[in-house]
Amino acid sequence: MINHHPSDEMILGYAAGSLSAGQAMVIHCHLELCPHCAARLKQAEALGGALIETLEENEPSGVNFDDLISEIDAMSIAEPEILLASEDHKSAHFTQLQKEENTPNLLLDFLGHGLADIQWKMVGPGIRQYVLPMESSEGEKVRLLKLSPGFVTPQHSHQGSEMTLVLKGSFCDETGRYASGDIQEADDGLDHQPVADTDEDCICLAVTDAPLEFKSVISRLMQPIVGI
Ligand SMILES: [Zn+2]
Image (cartoon, rainbow, N blue to C red):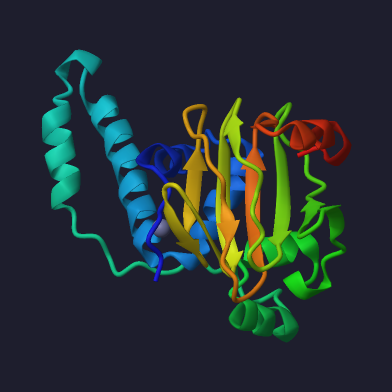
C-alpha cells in the first residue's frame, strides 16, 4: 500500500513535460507502481487538453477558470491503467523481474538488468550507491542507494531539492515511514535523518539537484570524497 505520493506540482510538471530528466524518471517509476497517481496524471492531462481547447475557442480574457476546473472535476476518470511499457519488445526475463522485484520497467530498461545485478559502490559502512549514467540538468544526479538494515543516515539538510522513491525495504524519518512505492519530496526546509528499517536492505531511487548539507564534521569531510 502506497502512502506517500508526489505533489500536484510534480504530476502537472510530468504531464506538461517540464520536469528535469531525473525528476521525470523518478515520477515515471512511481506512476508505474501507483494506480492512484496514474489516475491523477490522466486528470492533469485532461486539464491541460481542456485548457488548450478553451484557449483556442475563446479570447484569453474570456476564459473562466472556475468553470474549467468544475468541468474537469466532473469528468469521469476511467479505471486507471498502470503505465506498463509495451510488452512487445520486453523479454520474458524482464517481465519476471518486474513481477518479482516490483521494479519499474523504465528502470529495468535503463539498467539492462534487475536490482540484484547492480554494481554497487561502497559510500561508507552500511550505504552503497550506483549513480545512473544519464544526461541531466546541471547539478542534478540520479542514483540508486542501498541502505543496510538499520542504517542511520547522517542528519542533513538540503541546499536544493531531493526526491526519493523507495523500491525495496523501507525507511523512517521525522516525516513518517516510507515503504516500497512511496515517494518523498524534500526541499530546502527539510532537516532530517532517515533510518532504514531493520528487516531488510532498503533500495531507493533518488534525484538531487544540489549536494546535501550534512551536519556532522565527519560527514562533511566525507562528502567531497563520496560525492553525495
Ligand atoms: Zn502515487
